[in-house]
Image (cartoon, rainbow, N blue to C red; front, side, top):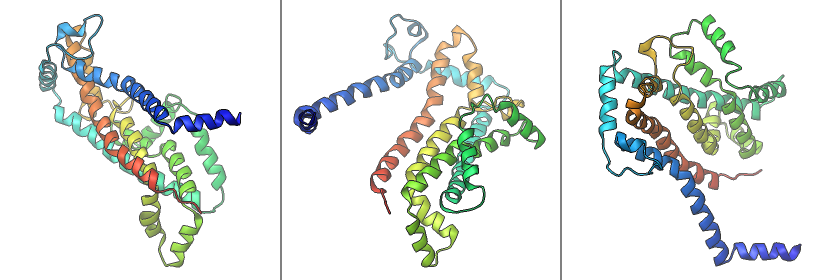
Length: 288
């Protein structure tokens, strides 16, 4: 058994082992990137290439007609395209910002302060993670209705701010990455609670809230309003795009362009945040 372990370690650090690891990673990366490349290619395919079998990944005769068709359809809509865009951007930016702040503040309090009901509160948060969003749809609607927020953008933003996933992620990360001695030292030096949170806690847990930004952004960007918004002027971009997709076979090209338009912002946010997450994760391994 020991010989097998030694052989495995030697092989993994050898040139052959490094090449095999690299080869496996390349193969996995190719399989993961194919769906995105296919989505990009589909957006530039003319209508006759959309139904080819077997389908081609890249277009043979690239065209921008699909995007022109989407633009034409949006101009014909009685609600301006800019209004749909503003609603989606507002919901996504405001919801993500306050979700990160509220989750971080709550997680910091539960992770580093003692108060009655602390453990019970965290257990309730963990239990809430077990519930699917469909289960909480009716309670959410009733609460928003009582608050008078139906048919407002806040009906989507407020539930997103209180999402338990962000709280759980931040609490676990703060407990692991920030020793109590560091906070005690800051308090001895005269740092106030808000100063400690903003200048010590948040920079150290940067990987956690960057990851939280990615999750929250993707979730809010793809929301169509559901059963909370009925006013067409308050509908979001996914709702407008879904109307285009519902146009049938004739709009297959437009639907492909819509799919690319909707996937670009989350991909950009992920790419920009990924390097920071990896860099910070590698340099913030503090232990007491």
